[in-house]
Image (tube, rainbow, N blue to C red):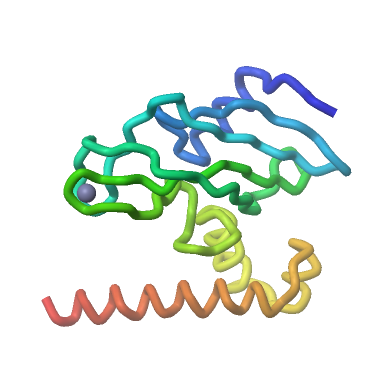
Length: 159
Ligand SMILES: [Zn+2]
């Protein structure tokens, strides 16, 4: 079933995913009770190179990716995007990472933050049942965030 995103819901989704030009929320659909958010980019878009910041880029090719996002209105929510690899005049070809992504994870940064916050107040096994994900996937998220915090803490100590 295809639904038109209402203005408020659209704004909430755009802000939680930090969607800005040249990418845009194309449409939302509901399938098997899950919300699917489809993000696209403008034809002829010039993405900023994430290595050097240059706008002298072209889209080289794309690969469709799907991330699980925080539940939205009590439903599981997935973000779909044909994600570009961009060809930068200075740096060459590199993968472009959307603002909601957490490295190469299949979960959005916000979903992962929610899991990390919940893992502080409940054991991982029931948390897995609560968010309907296998606990090994949740452990991976929790460990990765702990490592990042460790690296940040080490950096702060060495300054
Ligand atoms: Zn570059």
